[in-house]
Image (cartoon, rainbow, N blue to C red; front, side, top):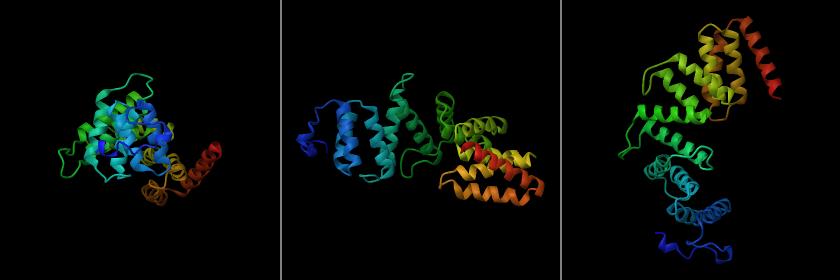
Length: 244
């Protein structure tokens, strides 16, 4: 497939399949930004064959999203696995790609890939989230690990450890973790503080998290006493003012 498109590079760009991996990666990146995704894929593939981790990561993302290529989760899984198996040196410029690969693999193991050898493996997903959460301090991994600990997925349930990871994630700016931790605190009797955290999380969350956070916050608000509601609103306003 690569040979068939060997002449696709723009000669004026000074890039060919023999170019250095980073030059190919840059060409692929700018081609992608300009909407020339076939050229981007070609450049990424040549760079990936030469061991460039960033190009492998870019290719995996395109396969996972069906972006410029037919969606192929198994192909994405294989590339993420290659990145993860290489490891990473402390402080390496490849750290971000490596961590992203860990989290992507955890996602695949948490749901499996239909009609493929990749089956549901919650224990493996939990272990990968733990690696990304503990070694690299990634908020999303801390949040996902906590969720699994709360429900007992992939191992024993542990609410104490789950709260620890949620607290770390929310301190690192993860709104979903803040909301979930607030809900736990609300259920444990800290009505005003828990409701305030859920309200603040709702104000800071991404659009994809808004539906479940809003449902959780509204349910807690309906159950809270009038005193706790007023106190929670005041605390949430203080938190909002602190951010601004």
